[in-house]
Image 1 (cartoon, one colour):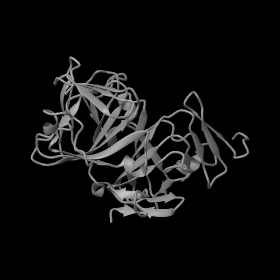
Image 2: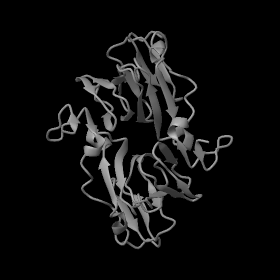
Image 3: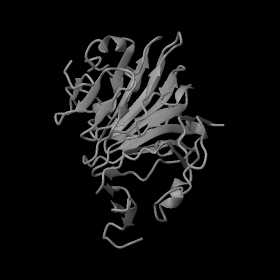
Image 4: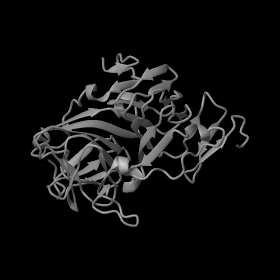
Length: 166
Length: 166
């Protein structure tokens, strides 16, 4: 049993073992050809399990060669990561930064500094990621022909940079 | 050096070693006789170091006998914890739950379920705590004669439960 305090038919646990939380059923929202690039990534939603709605927390695992996301910046939502296992490379507008367990990084909304993690090692990377759910957010992707707008329904709409749909 | 990417006169680092982040200069906002009860607690703000404003993330250490806070519930702000080291006891309205490294818990705003951690062991407890910054939040404390309202300036006002000031 991963949960303490009981978990039946949606009842919220008091606490849980993060690594035993269920993975997200939908692996990615990206359209192809980007979705396939997320094959080495697995996200376990943690905050949602407790009914949290103001921010999300995931336990995310990157297999060797995996990446956290397309390199991106948010217009309104802040993000934070804390490395639990492995040695990923953080890529930002400033270049590459080597991370290790116990290191953290934050990505302030609206700066235009785009980020992602990649795992160039032969071992898994495991980290916690936190992001808030401010409405009206937009995602920009300096390395790829894609842009994203968060709809009023909380779902992302992806288009090419000229606005044509995927 | 704890920072990667440089940190001078308020410049934001790209990443940092969480355990080497500076502790919060003011140990607690509680009035006495409650402030003294937080002597075994040390918080290192992490999200603030990167300029994040939508939520806060702290690396918090509880010495043997320490507690995370007075047992409390928030009206509007969600909270989340992830245990990195040690074996604290989580106290909620449901009673006591034993935690261990790799376990997490979330505290949904508005439920009235009050929580705190205590460290009954002889070893330190270290955990990450996340909380958003929704305005108009209030804190309620079932075990103590105190109540809290978050002012428009982002500072907490503490009173006795009959409204008289501390």
